[in-house]
Amino acid sequence: MNWAVTFSEQLGNVVMYVRDRVPPGQGISPTDYKDWVDDNKNHSSAYASYDPPGAYTFTNPPVRPGNTYFLGFRAINDATFSVSCNTNGGYIDYTNTIPFYGGTLNTSVPSHATLKLRIDVPADARRLIMNFTNVSAFNLYLDQGAVPARNGSDPYSAIAQPNPVLNQALYNASGWPWLPNYMYFLFVTNTSASAQNFAFGVNGLNCATDDADSDGLPDCWELTYWSNINSYGPNDDPDGDGVKNIDEFLEGTDPINPLSFHPRLVVNAQNGTVNRNPAGTLTTNVPPKVWYNLGQTVQLTPVPNAGYNLLGWSGDASGAANPLSVPQLHRPPARPH
Ligand SMILES: [Ca+2]
Ligand SMILES: [Ca+2]
Image (cartoon, protein in one colour):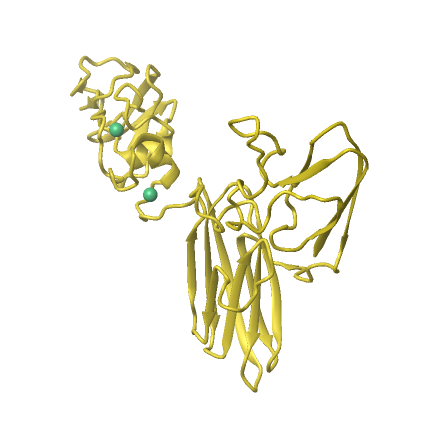
């Protein structure tokens, strides 16, 4: 729970600095000594530089499990010093970990009993969604990096609230405490005089899965090309290449480059079928279209029904070649008849 740092001076004078983003060092001027107040993670001026020598105990919070901390010493004059550290105060007993991606729990909580749960939010997390199923007899408290204080200061709590939902973005760099790559601690208490069922699911999302506008286009993909996730929808074709955004996404092409797309080959046959070689890849359209890579050549072989023969090709093709070799275009090229 606590990190105890002790330093002593055998000669001269040093000042100790702690940081939790980068090693301590000078700021913009020779006398601008940065400490973890500047790291803006804890929003408190309580954490400053440390002098005189002695024992300093850093509690949780501001110290958070699983994080890296840096100690730096600034010598006021020529100095010899020593430093040591250890931990004390026990440990955080939230050892029941619920997975961030698809984690679930469904349990009965005895009267006036509690649950202590931990969700390790990975570095690539983009959104934390928690769906709770509980009666109003439950109180929930969630904190990041430290066990919930349960005094109104926790970043999220649900007091006597049935079936609450937390849907929290984690991608704003200034969104402290809602950031990825931290342990989150959930405290649950059943305030009633009887056992109650409690269930919840963690639907953790990352860049590949977060889709806040539910348009089928992952938000990170949209933001790669446009400033806002609402700029375009899945059926828009802003680059005018004939392939809508949802297909550009599914096929891995660039939705703002009209030269980046997969051409479709539409073949209609009367009184028979047409074999394709290669077969191509089906789109998600209903009915599906077939796409190829740009420049790919496709061989079409008619398979007439009994009693029929190939008369010829029309549309973007002509003649009566059998098989027909189609150098890829981005328009429907061929129709046998
Ligand atoms: Ca989206
Ligand atoms: Ca397009």
